Length: 576
Image (cartoon, rainbow, N blue to C red; front, side, top):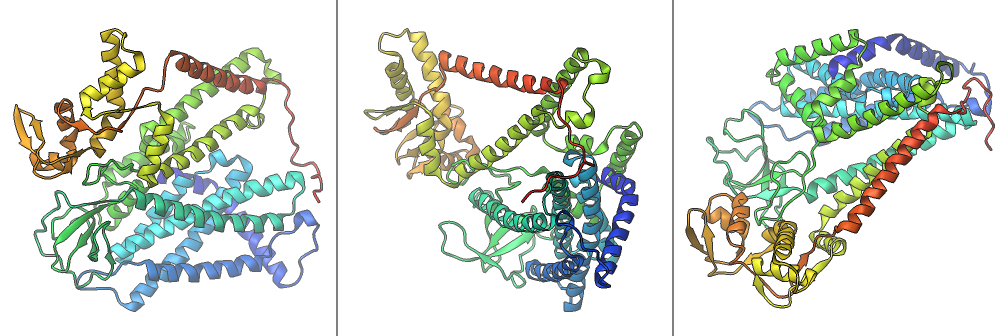
């Protein structure tokens, strides 16, 4: 990733130099009052607006670093002058790297397209260079890592907005828009989207954060709570606790992470985040949806590896060599690198879309004479591309909507009740008998035994996770354990708590559930979800998939016909 970003930067150096010189000329002309009055479609925001914006950005980022920097730990906390130098250097690096990479992003997006914008590579390159500068200066503390990550994050957003701005201004030129009005609208949109998306991420992370008291580590060295200033509450616990961030290689021998510590220095809670967290169940057995962020893991690996001088440089240089070989073979290294570190379930749909595109292009090539085949630019303007864009946007919106379901357990239960047909138990029954009752009510009393057993198994598979997490086992219940053993429940609890007490592992609740489906009793009024798909419904769904696929191929093949192209050199149509 870093090699690909640096290669893109080197290739764009002539463009960068030209853009810098043009900006300096505009600033000098404006300062000297020599700016020539331009038409409406040539009016941009003044360069002094940009200059004051850069100054305001430097000051705002310096203040942010000062407020967001964690409380220093250890015997040699940095001085005020050192902290101020870190903050100012971080702000200056953001402006310098942001200026360079925004130029790269802007030119590549304007000349080639947003799909060729190497945002990830430029972000990794920024993080690498920033961490190397900090390493040379001897800034390797946790607060320095926060500064380095913040520099890379702001540069990433700046480069992304640079490409978006170029795309918008290019489109506006073709339709005759006013650049100044577009730039103000982009500024408002960037600020509002940052606030909204930031709030969404915070809410998602908090909703899926787990506060666990099970299997807490025992520090080898007592935790010094004197430098710990921040306090936090655990859900359902009115006692405030100190927040202790365990760093890699800490003298206490504790795994890195966030912990809540009491006044005696004892660890009371492990705080597992919703984003990139590991615990998928709370202590009461309820499941929690976690959100993977592979790029964030990559950034953390680079930052910790460089500043702690434990980065496996052999693997890094091997990756650089692979990127160079790919570039020499005229294969873009950045998409290849993205496919390497992204999870397979994310890259597989991209690969499937590429296969569909290759098939469509092959059909077009066979049906169309060489002189009538669309160029690469024309192929990117076909209805098939618009259809694919709609799929991407729809998938993103659907993903956000699905994520909102994790905010409330009652909401998920209500939607599950609406999604599936349900059977309500009229009387209390064991779990196994309840499954048979639901199957008998669905198929009728005269249904064959094998059909009843098959449907009962399907109902059991559909309801097992929900019942296992929500079923309250009363005191005195005798449960079967592995190895022909038994366990008497001493107090009302859920299966995860009983599994932790009886088997030493809350994740063994699934085994406990399977062994006791004939003993655990469901109360009257329990709703059991029934399989929603039957043969006619599956047929309709398959038909819908075939129709959508046919529409995609049809729109893709439309590229073979005559397509209207826009001449960028033509005079734009004025827009009121």
